[in-house]
Length: 134
Image (cartoon, rainbow, N blue to C red; front, side, top):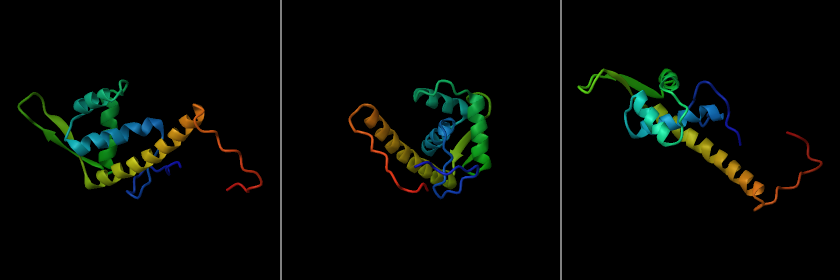
């Protein structure tokens, strides 16, 4: 079942879905564990196989998430180099992450079914006839 498309998350299970948006739940997941700046998030994503994601893309997504109220940011002026903007997940971000997890779980079920049929482990269901289309 495909998730409903929306530019503004409502926290009610509406998750925009497309492969290009897969970066969002991974950013939210990382920020659910620790505060982080863009470069650290880029390293985290590379460790998960997201090799083509640059910091510009990460910061663009983080700014959008902040605009939506899903993350907050603050300047970290630590002694280890220049000031960096660090991001933290908000309560609304946690709700949205939970919605993403539900949508991805549904998508995983659909993918599991596809690969089961593709490998021949499960035959595809026969088409149903004489049923009106929704």
